[in-house]
Amino acid sequence: MEVNFGFCLFLLVLLAPLTCAGRAAMSTTAGGGGGGDGGGDGSIQKLEVQKHLKNLNRPPVKSIKSPDGDIIDCVHVSHQPAFDHPDLKSHKIQMRPNFHPEGNNFGESKVSSNSKPITQLWHKSGRCSEGTIPIRRTKKDDILRASSVQNFGKKKHKSTPQPKPAKPLPDLFTQSGHQHAIAYVEGGNFYGAKATINVWDPKIQQPNEFSLSQIWILAGSFNQDLNSIEAGWQVSPDLYGDNNTRLFTYWTSDAYQATGCYNLLCSGFIQINNDIALGASISPLSNYGSSQYDISLLVWKDPKEGNWWMQFGNDHVLGYWPAPLFSYLTESASMIEWGGEVVNSESDGQHTSTQMGSGHFPDEGFGKASYFKNIQVVDGDNKLRAPKDLGTYTEKENCYNVKTGNAGDWGTYFYYGGPGRNPNCQ
Image 1 (tube, rainbow, N blue to C red):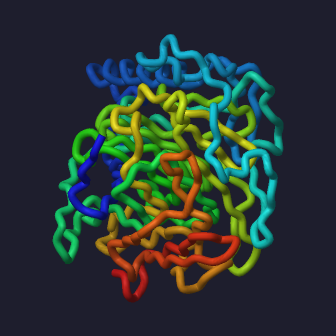
Image 2: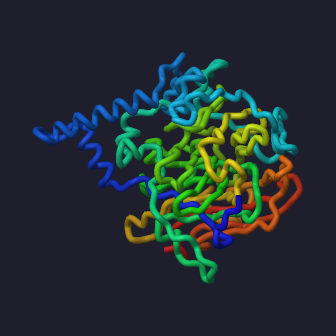
Image 3: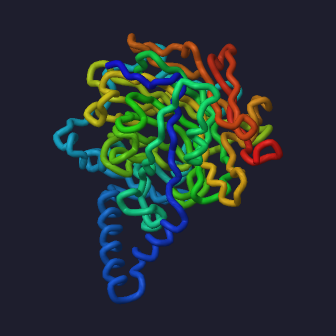
């Protein structure tokens, strides 16, 4: 299937979770309001919240209290939310991929000479047993921060015009309050992507802003029928209620209109791994001029079943997005992006000071600027290879920037990020 993007550059826009007014309105309603009719509306909203919590928080085999305050529920693998999806009611769980991409180091625990291994905070308090999966328990306050019960765990949809082949580029993405610093490839058939991503704790100016670093796997047109699989790390106070750096995934098959969600907050992604919890905090984190930490992520399409698998590190195959979830991605991706994104709400009339990556510009280099290294794509022969004709893009290079390179053990890499507001970025 041939997909026409119309222009070589295509950026996903993660739209701002919601306004403060929206949160306040929902909190008032969910809390029961005053009396009379308002109280009735509040009771209905309370029931909706309770019903949604019951649906998301499945009965656990056991529960683990993480040092960061999270509760991790160990839920039987067959009881996870994925199987509520109408296309997955009779789905038989695939407990392992039929094929790994050639060149992948699955099962080989290697530690880079200039970075250190990483884990999740909840591991300090316990582990989930075989046959169960770890699910971060959703709290009532998590849902109340959303604009509605239905929108919890989802990106807010907004119709964005498709870029046209003209220079300079139209300022499409800053209009939506989002800014990026990415590397990308397009124009071919891609069956997966891999990267090792430096992990930091960027500072967030406003609760309705976020900062993330991720891989995007894309097919379709952005306006209506975009298929996207996404994985990386993020700091999102609105979604999680704190400023912790967390592992996340996302998917959509209709440009964020009705399908998809973060992590396991709806039916779709099927997890098989009992060690790694989506949405859980990552530890330890990199420090400026000191120890550096990174995570390795791989997403690829199983050539036999057509499911899209995700691997964390060299040892953890987390699970898969079943083929029936998608339209264009049932065949292949037509674009891959790697990089960072922030929300710029300009709450005080100036550019946000929310940081991307480490909060420092690429020119500062290792130990100071955040990086993606060993970025690769999976080709039609199920082989990992370096991307060809790698492009880069950022809306405002004085706020956030990206700089590519190629060297030895790092393969194809780039530094990215920045501080946001500064004397040259207002």
